Length: 405
Ligand SMILES: Cc1ncc(COP(=O)(O)O)c(C=O)c1O
Image (cartoon, rainbow, N blue to C red; front, side, top):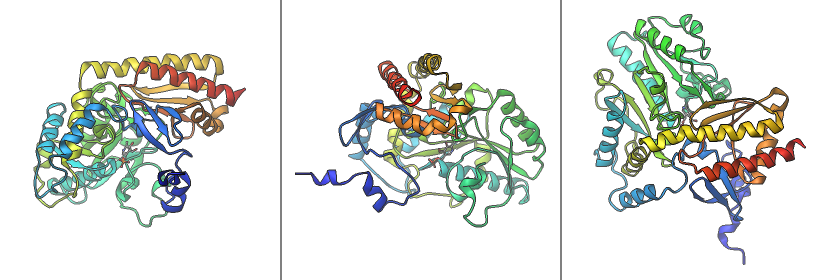
């Protein structure tokens, strides 16, 4: 007899769920480390990491233990109370970063929404209400709320939803002259990803970030680093800004922070929050004890020499395997990114094959993501096993053989 559970299939999605996504044809039911299994028991090696989220792989035993313990103590309180896991997590974030104040929310978009609102509020209180211009970059991505899609630099995500918030301008990424042509004393903030993730895994240059800091200082604008994809060890340092030696005024985190449990954070300084009073902003779930307990453990595990230097070693391993693959197939133009946020840029003559390549990879049992139109993105667990990398690359090789020969 077919169990009732098995009647739930990918087709059920089309019948019940808003088609804003087009999920893969199989339904995963179990995950351990960097491997997942579907309803039919087929096993996959996961280089997608839940889009840079499952930073410690699937169902990490220590995270499971913390989640279980916290679930037996306290689930939810709301912001009428504070709670111990939130306070401990805030302490941890503050002691390991430039920041002295933290706001917790539930998703990357919410952390950015809070950051943009804070920048405008701060400037209106400290300077004047005209100082509300936000500069961001073409191809950037900052989330799907209406403010964050409007700040993001991809019109396809913000068009056709009616009038957008005004005062938002876009400059060219890694091109400081275009920022100079837009910035003035009415600018309240510049927001930048240190590696443009959705835009194609494009790292910001050191000189660009340094120059942004100088310009922001000159015009009293706040510099916001969106580290939702790059934060919490993804690039081999706890925060990607530590590679640049440049301190932002506001930093946003999500994804890897919860290792799969929804949580985000906006970090800033005492000076900037000095104008904030209760009621200015808020959320029901932000600082939820379950999420904060898990995130505290995620950071405790990741913020160690072993895990962070391991990220660099794993990057080298993946890169050398990819170089071997490319010797045979000659289809990669470039391998870019930092740590375990890796973009494989396809040569232009192969970019129309990207879907087919990923589909054949799935048939062989290995999962990748895309970024932009011609980039295969890898954002696996920061502690992915060597064996999983080697086996995953073997499967990728076999998939390419099928697509190209
Ligand atoms: C850089 C960046 N900012 C913001 C977001 C939005 O995060 P969320 O989907 O959790 O709202 C993302 C998600 O991909 C991101 O990569």
